[in-house]
Image 1 (cartoon, rainbow, N blue to C red):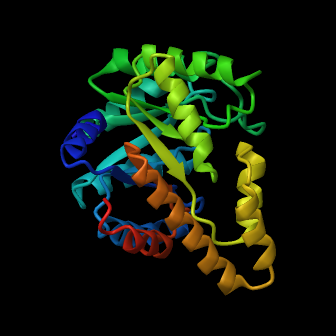
Image 2: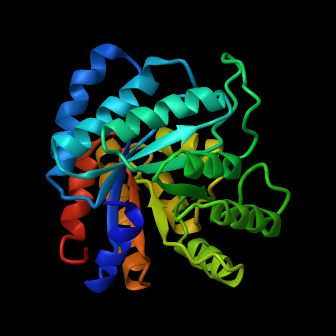
Image 3: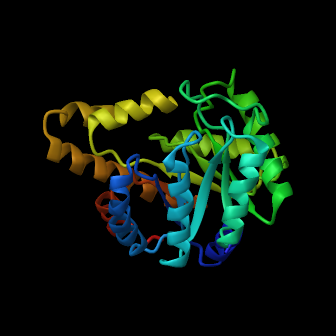
Amino acid sequence: MKIPAIFEEKKKSNKPVLSFEIFPPKKEAALKNIDETLEMLCDLHPDFISVTFGAGGSTVDNQTVEIAKKIKNTYGIEPLVHITCLHYSKQEITEILKQLEAFGIENVLALRGDVNPDIPMKHDFKYANELVSFIKSQGDFAVSGACYPETHLEAPDAITDIHNLKRKVDAGAEHLVSQLFFDNELFYDFYEKTRIAGIDVPVDAGVMPVTNRAQIERMVNICGASLPDKFARVLKKYDENKEALFDAGMAYTINQIVDLIAHDVEGVHIYTMNNPTVAKRICDGIRNLV
């Protein structure tokens, strides 16, 4: 089933779409561990699972397709395959899409991707909206896109970022997944601006569970997400107690999701960091809400 149709189905029950993100392991030896992760995640019955993609020419790229195929054929859950374009040519993207089509995979998340200094850039695509248009021209795919509640780091301002997002939707993106955030008010404000701008596709609220301080500081540096004062206090208070910080982080994330659902968000996308135990704990906390 295509992801826009999943949103339509869940809307009938007045419940949000629940989804997870996983990433292929960087080493071949760790690939077998992903099976255990998938089994535990799929037992939680998400509506779809997204699988991240490498920068180009790595074993991770091949694993992305293999993992997506397993999610669909073994577990009967829809995969959403990430595809980045800065390091790929149109011919290479076409070959990837042919593989997905052959396996019956019809949901793709079109991303520009980050610059990798170790891999030469190709010049067929410059922006994600160009990739969206190209994918739509290559087959009957449902294309998703990324969005940034706190503005893309490379955008000059929030208004420009919204305009760029509108271009992505106009190019054919039918669903959006937000970058992680820790302050729900920022997401609500962003969502309202998308509607004012004429963006009317479903928007998933991206949530990352916090399990340790180093992890969160790394992610904040990468994506530019801000930390609310109440969250910063949690990190400071339990910095020296690993178990307490884990419990406090889980409580914060569950409360964040409860508030999102109470505000009738269309979907919640959990960045699992390949940790099914964390995902299960969250799902136990919101079991009767989704």
